Image (tube, rainbow, N blue to C red; front, side):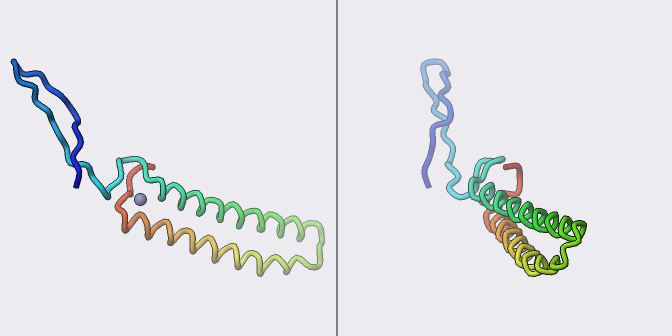
Length: 101
Ligand SMILES: [Zn+2]
């Protein structure tokens, strides 16, 4: 555990130094770098899934007879998205960084 000086107060001739314990594990409210990274990965996975769905939609509209080839890609993208989601949720659960960020 470490301590940080957070304020100096002049009271008469005495200088009071206020200290607070630095929170080693709990992040500052509103920011957790790792959560942000995991969230970005999750969003990327969602975008990827949407992109493949769009391509399949276009293939069907264009009368592409091979539009079924997208199904395996969609399945993989779906699994990836689920994994990212759980990684993100597991981190937030373990780290307690629910708020903000
Ligand atoms: Zn966190």
